[in-house]
Each structure stands twice: as structure tokens, then as C-alpha cells.
Figure (cartoon, rainbow, N blue to C red):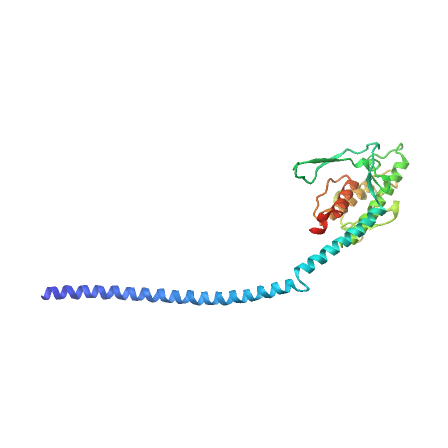
Length: 278
């Protein structure tokens, strides 16, 4: 009986220890559960606050200053910009003519894919484009010699003056300051570069031209001498301005050499329905 009593005491002691461990474990779990409940209550209150804010935001969006009125206002502004640019296009129409001598290589680009041809390639011939009936040829800016046609030089200067004026007006209408400002002067137009490249600086300083970092350098969009470096760089900068306008409205440039092709692409996109809807 005494041995059985001792054995029962030992069993009771083990059960008491296990019961104590279980109580401690239960207490810890209860504390964790209370902590989770408090976190859940805080999250619930935060969710209710966020829900009220969402409802207030929905009410504000549906009000006078909401998304729909602002979207309609944006479409109205885009339509107004489209109209202003159409007036520029009437002043300086860019048209495709046939039967003109090709002095530039045609450029191909991947056009917007149609439903039947997702990878259509449209060839564009820069030599077939005119602005206000004037052809723009870059040949005098690359190969100037004694036998270069003076009429071709004047025609190119006139066309570049037209493009420069149109680009400056479009930049003004769509509220985009041009990276390379233009000093208009018809066929004697200049374009400014506030940070010319090292190659341009070296080419210009080699000709004993003054250079100052405090003032922008002006490059003529016409040929005023046998040196074509400054004029070719001016055409390059003008094309960069056109590319800036294209990128601003979400269109990629069609090439770095054809100013009229890029300008025509700019007009086509502004006149499209997509320009108003985006």
C-alpha cells in the first residue's frame, strides 16, 4: 500500500508539472490571441477610416472638380490645340508631290499596325515632301561646292524657316518649351544651343569663332559661306526640337535625318482622334 501510495504521488506530481506547463502555454497563447485581437481591432478602425475617405474621394471625383469634368476639360483643351495646329498647317502645308528629283534616300519605318497586317512597313520619301510648295534638300548642307545650285540653297533655307516657325508655334500651343530655342528670321533663321557638344565646340573654335559659356551659341538654318558645319548642326538641332514634340505626345521619331518626315508625322498624330482621347 505504501509503494502504491508513493507511485500515486509520483504520478500526481508529474501530472501537476504537466498541468503547470499547459497552463503557462495556455497563458502565452491567450496573450498572443489578445494581441492579435487588439491588432485586428486597430486594423478594423483603420479600414473604416479608409472606407470613409474612399467614399469622400468618390464623392469629390463625381463633383464639379472630379475626374469626369477634368477629363472633359482635357479633351476640350486637346481639341483647341488641334484647331490651333490646324491653322499652322494651313499656313505651312506639308504635302506629298510626285515627279521630283530624289536627292535623299527614302526612309522606311514601321507604321502603326493595322488589323490585317500587324507589321506593315511604310516607305516615306523625304524628297517627295514639300512645305508651302517648297522642297527641303539637305544636299547643300553636306556637299557644298562652287557648282551648287544657288536656288536650291535658297529653297532649303526658306523651307527650314517655315519648319522652324511652325515648330515654335506648335511648341507654344501645346505648352512645351523647346530645348533648342529658335530665333525666327524667315530664310535667315537661327537656332540656339545652350550646351553644344564637344565636337561642335572643337569644329567651331577651330574656325576662330568666339565661344562663351555664358551665352547660347546660335547656328544658322541657312548657308552663309562655304563652311557647312554650322548649318548642318543647326538642321540637326531643329530635328531634335521636332523629336522633342513627338516624344511629348507619345510618338517615336522616324529618323534623325529627315526633318519634314518627322514634322509630317507630328501633324498627323495631332490631327488624329487618338491625340484627343489619350
